[in-house]
Image 1 (cartoon, helix red, strand yellow):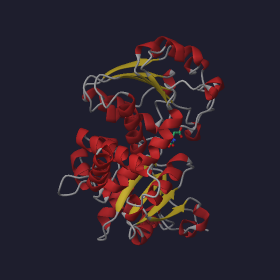
Image 2 (cartoon, rainbow, N blue to C red; image 1 turned 30 degrees about the horizontal axis):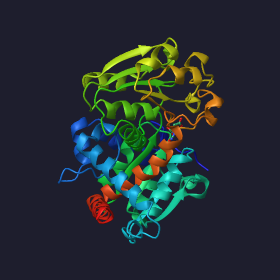
Image 3 (cartoon, rainbow, N blue to C red; image 1 turned 30 degrees about the vertical axis):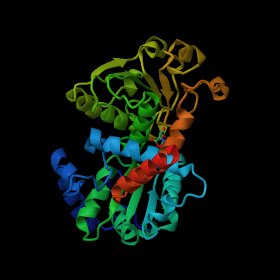
Length: 376
Ligand code: NCD
């Protein structure tokens, strides 16, 4: 087997000339202005057609996702209600995961099922043509031929745009969802996190003080959520991490430009937690290097929880390791959100898929009508 040619963490096939052709084109593609890239991810009517980066979201979109997730969840609780599962009998989804995943993969798989979609997971590349030298872009293009939406996770930070690049190349219309691009972005996790925050604070996302703790450098969930929170008024962010895992320059520049007040803290979490509305914990992302050892001064334990305000919350995208003290696993404290975030993830993904295929309004309307009928 000839070796795959890798560039920017993406596989371009085994042939030098073919690989170089696409590498050059992709480089040109990603060098376009952020405005142009956003335009390529947006339909003529202003609605997003791909979910690639958190910087493409605005208040209106987040509000739609929030309200649709809420409506779908309410309907999902009605036994015997087949409205949601009747929505997409002819749509099919491919979950293309080249990096490990439990929550994101399972919640997308379930969300697609809830909406009645046909779906398949590709998460073992030894069974795919990549083993035979097929490039990442050809794999995406191939899979997109059979599916209406491709949900992709990949170790490369540039994979957020590979799906958009491929979509631009082919004439067939398909939707691309970035389910985690290396240490870069995880926009759908950002959406489920903001849904969780919104639910916890009665829909009010302004003037929130949030502490991101752990691996701010490579924590893609931090990058996406920080960008989303920068949309709202008066956001203040503490990045609580050792020097070498402090926030990456790109995210820092982005949120600062949006007017977010930021503090880079290398001290102890115990001094910051009482000042916050949200403490957002993360593990050390040692699959990208390093030993993964967690500094005890950033551990979230009962003492930290006790120091937080009554209406503040703790979050974590999971998987968690030693950064959350195990005693908290048996705590019923309603401020601990990490398990709830996971359920929210499934409904947020139902909302994202229904938005991409234009049935979100229908879901909200049917839910409102049901509410009105129940109240009568
Ligand atoms: C996160 C991820 O993959 O970035 N997990 C998730 O999707 N819920 C966080 C992590 O792996 O630490």
